Image (cartoon, rainbow, N blue to C red; front, side, top):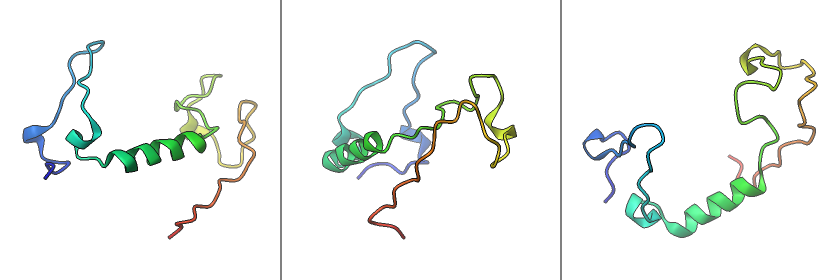
Length: 87
């Protein structure tokens, strides 16, 4: 049985900046390989058009932009597809 997520006794801590990260098979990390592959495929298929950083290209922090403010850099214009497993 995998250790609890908050069990720091067996937690992996990567080395200093720039060092290689340990690689393990999904099953060794407690993941079902098929479910993990399906989750990755879903994430790739539904890639967000929102920035991957909290800063816009013009340097503004995302947290200071109003929800209804129109951004010159925003490219999101399509609704988020509903999941077939919506709660």
